Length: 355
Image (cartoon, rainbow, N blue to C red):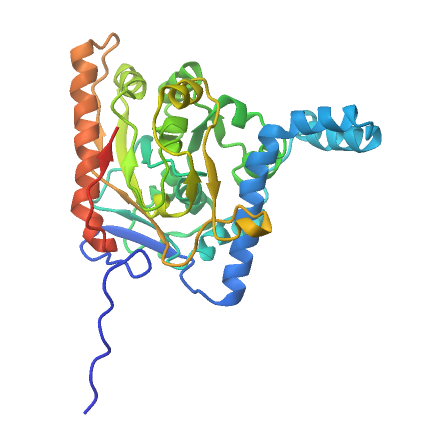
């Protein structure tokens, strides 16, 4: 008499998606080829981010050390995408999406309820983690996947997922990152998260927007397996959404906080001042730090984003403090509800800490 195989406990590697309206779970194969290609894609993303931000310093150092030809060559490569229009590259997009296969539990995106996708949405992502991996993968899903790869869908779901990412103004113009990620991988669907840029995009109502609300302040709080969000003082995006009458949809990524350990994480006056002035002050490390690699942890890690309830904000040209506080409270309450109602799916028992 055959017996049933034992049921594995829910975890980031063995999630339970029952009862969710629509789910896509990618990169869960865990064969050596998938993991290696995923590692290469993540390395590309991570170092495009880091080297892009620090490339001006690198070039100046090369000139100072009298490596003139090397510095000139690197300058030419970096200037190229600012002079020549670089098109998106579908093969590169598929390669970058392979990054989700690095993690043992892969990457998933789920909607709790059926959502009306008839107009653009402002997606609020949490937590930032170190490199916002699953926010990036979520946007790529709208480009590289087909409708049949979701458990339930509408024709406009992928259109809204392939929206525009709002990022730090320096990252939006960073060399290398601009070429490899903004142009090749996203088809120029990255914009500055400044007030002017965000208001313009919200009023145009052409693309859904991805905003990692906590920003550098949330990244500075990163500690392995510590779920927290930085949201109490983040009210600007609520004001802009009210001024434009936008649809707002909070999302929480389970597992994003499990990707790295950090040195000197937490809050203090100096760290707060640095992050408020857009100066990163978090020092991450993964399992391969001895190889000088910034690859994240993969064992027992999966990245799983769950979208909550959509709310259509009223259009208020001059929202009062009470208006902003009311809708900000809804956003924070909904974010906490998403975490508390879904943490059992991933074997999580602790509470979400709200800063």
